[in-house]
Length: 493
Image (tube, rainbow, N blue to C red; front, side, top):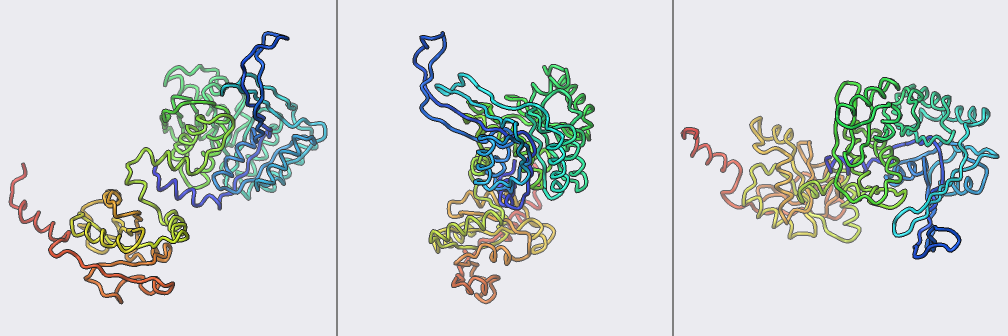
């Protein structure tokens, strides 16, 4: 995973419209301790110390998307009971659209109660309805879906076999989504995956894949056999099988298979891990990632989720931190323009002065370092705008740069005096300066103040331009000339 791409994706989350269709329920947790056996029967007595009520099932998927910053709506059928009203009230409080949630008298809204002691589940109690929707409610739900599905960027199907996702409801979703080529991602249940025909991708875990295909997964060969069977059954283009400690395997209709290893973590609870995978996969796809990259993002998030107890959301900060942990420290300083603009705005709100400079910085030398150190002393943060490879070629010719943009960015980010590096592809950093609004704009002593790009912009809001002399005799051109002089006539060793 590329951390910059992930940060950029999260910066666009607010524009992504996600619809979750499926079985809603409440997850109740009773936390306590057990130190004695009941005198009434040979069972443990749990002294309840804390109670917690959370969104479960499709509600946990919706809550996960909301935590990522997306616009979220939910479509389902629940009962006209206390649990149902609690669900709707919770959704409204969170800002999740509930126009697609219908209520039916006599239907029991699901509530799963888990009793935990010493961080271990003692027992689970389920109170729910499992019968299929009545014809009138099924028709009302289908009419709503037919009208509203085309208005979303992605549709998520969260199936817990509680009766909401009837064959007709699923057909309506697939047909409506196909009209606008909206991706539909499904967390499936049951053994007959034919009901999911038309979906973009299914996300069964290994046990579910074995049950639906009838093939025990024991090795790579049986894994591929099970995947082929399921893809043929549901006429799928894509299938993502989650395999616990063995990671994930993405099978594509093109014949490509991508195996994604898991990140070693201590597992406390797998409750809701499938919800996390579905939410992050859909989030990635809606945000423009290909399925393989979206699956890698989901894999990172699932690794975080299983380290928590109960149905839990995973935050953008947790995901970005996990992705960044797999890179060098310098990687955390390299930011996209969108992400960096938000960071700089926060820093300036705190009263910090931002210094900006830019350049190609091809073949870093002592002159560069002294220049950057001097620039950093002018303020509290130094942001370096770095010309991309394409930009350098336009400015300096087809033989430059000698060092690629990624390598140049990480070398510069490794310097203590540089706080952030941001690549730009234009010939000048004008748009980057407009986005970041630094207080101090710095260029080398070979410029005049009037010749500095962005001077008028910075001065318009009270900023200033500073010119710093370069160290004599230190330049990339001089280094190239020395190399050519010393080695041009020397035979290769």
